[in-house]
Image 1 (spheres, rainbow, N blue to C red):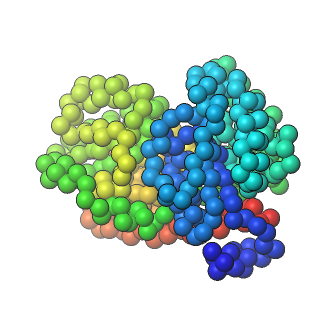
Image 2: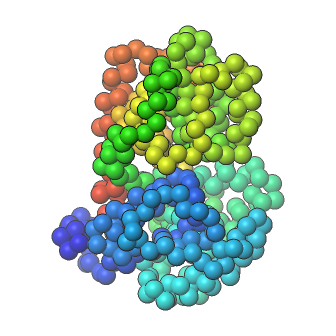
Amino acid sequence: MLAYLIILRLKCGEILVDINKVAFLVNSLSGGGAERVIQTLSNSLVGKGFDIYLILLDDEDIRYDLDDRVKVLRLKTSFLSKGPLKILILPFQAAELSVVLRRIDVKNVISFLVRSNFVSVISGIFSNRKVVISERNYSKLQYNSKGFKGFVMNSLIKFLYKRADLILPISHGIECSLISDYGLDSRKIKVIHNPQDLKAIKELSVQSGNDDFFIKNNGFFYVTVGRLVDQKDHVTLINAFKRVQEVRSDAKLIIIGDGSLKSYLKDSVDKLKLKDHVFFLGFVNNPFFYLNNSDVFVFSSKFEGFGNVLVEAMACGLPVISTDCLSGPSEILRDGEYGILVEVGNVNEMSNSMLSLLDNKKYDYYRGKSLARSLDFDVDIVELKYLSVFEN
């Protein structure tokens, strides 16, 4: 670890302080992009000798593999963290968090996801520590359509986030929203893109998996990964795929993820007579096996914070097509240099782009671009930025 911290000092050009103990605060590890980032950072840092704690607000199963040396703590108030109680018990969870942090003697804390950010800020107000929060999504778009609940969440963000010492959005699009929509001080904001453990992704992608699936369903595979919720707009993707399948009869679509719209989406697939060509796999522990064995990754979101799965797909060598949504994809793909960007909700544009990658020359071009761009998000590079936050 000493050699690693010397590199950190050289990279950051600052005086090194004791940052060997770090805690990540998050709602749960039950699935999601932020949760996978925490898994990536925790496993990487603990492997370099850091003392890593994960503190969970909710009483849900952990669905990500963690290094045995990572210490997982669940707040005792987690059993109350259900339904509307989640907001009402924020002060109690903040008080408990302060007690836990004093007990384990950790001052370097980063919270992930909005509710965890609220808890961390409230806790920080009553304790002697700097508050660092990570903003993972385009909150204004996420909450504007949710009526009274959205009003409450937007109001809490505006009131509490300004009391944080540092905010770490995962894209410049989110940074702009925090400043313009919530009136936050730009001097307290630092963009850090999400990390990916490229070595682990490569190893997992070539592990044995459900090989029979690809043998039985031989064809040209499009794949997507994401929760089955309105934000991800699988409806546009399925309709676009319908047009692709009419041109390429052996085309298949793999949809990885669970969510409230699963039944509705399956009904849509049945009505379009695509049941034998679209496969809902649910939550998958190792999605990289399916990415590595597919041909093209397609992302249809209406809005995003970053879009982890784009980088994961690129690391597996897949050409990617993504909606040019706020925010993240255009930053990852550098305005279309490293992948194809299409208009949000535009079925024709998405289907045409999906068909365009049937051309071998174009396919190979974007495959090479994907692999090259993914290197910029390797965890060894990004985690230095996180550690520099504590150092400063």
